[in-house]
Length: 82
Image 1 (cartoon, rainbow, N blue to C red):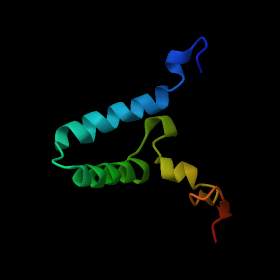
Image 2 (cartoon, rainbow, N blue to C red):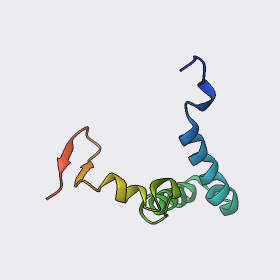
Image 3 (cartoon, helix red, strand yellow):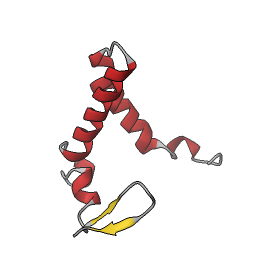
């Protein structure tokens, strides 16, 4: 990814980090690492499960990802939901 157009290679994740910093990390002023981990996890869970995204036709990322009944279990296995 060091060729022409490199500046836009990571635009999605860069935008996500900007959002999490300005909507959660900076306003929260966490006092320790445990509190920060908990708060950021809660924010990401809300971001994926409850927050509507205009780029996803006002759906949540979870609705799009789980729409076909499949999910990723974290062990490189793709399961069919029962």
